[in-house]
Amino acid sequence: MTPDAFHYATRYAIRKEAGLQHRKSAEAPSGLVNGSNKDFYVSKKYVVDRNGDDLFDATDVVAYVNGSAVTVTGVNAETGKVVLDVAPTTGQIVTVDYQFSQASDADIDEVRAETEDWLTRGVKGYIDVTVFANTPTVNYPKLFSTIVKLYAAALLLIRDYGSGADTDLTSKDGYKKLQLAKSMLSDWVAEITDAGSDDPSSRAPRVRQKNDGTIFRRERNLSDSHPDKDDQFMRKQ
Image (cartoon, rainbow, N blue to C red):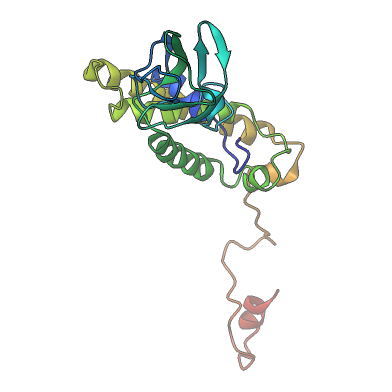
């Protein structure tokens, strides 16, 4: 869930599941330390959300000058630019803690949207997922978070966003996660179907049919001009 939209899993959770969230600590960024320069650049990109709030901003990078934390006023995910509030003076040592990934936010958003669409189709008729999106305070099956995390991570691995990894092993791990996500969703549907739900709106649809003993379907569209008793029977409601 994010402040501006409903999601079952954060970008952070999906990256972690896929093994595409990496930590960099005490890195000395490039940039002049001369008392006037505030702009520094880290070596790894994309710089990403590290606190799991699904937002990327200056709070996701921690900078230090001579070992003391200083205020970061800006950060650019693609270029790795980190802007400090106060320019460090000559001789001071600047270090930065941050997290990075080969998969950008746009990459994550693409697979997450595809995954949530798949989940919505899979539970249609069993539960109304629009309630969660329209009212984020409504509790939703927590299993959905795990399913979405697994499925989206699987798509990332299968598409080989993890550069530098063994493609074959990465893809195989992705397909395993994909099958696990599908199996978990199937199990959830089976439980709902077998046990029902306390919420009638989330129960599996049941087929109901009225029968008065005849095995033949009645034709309801005959005109009133048919005088035959058999026709009258067939028009019976």
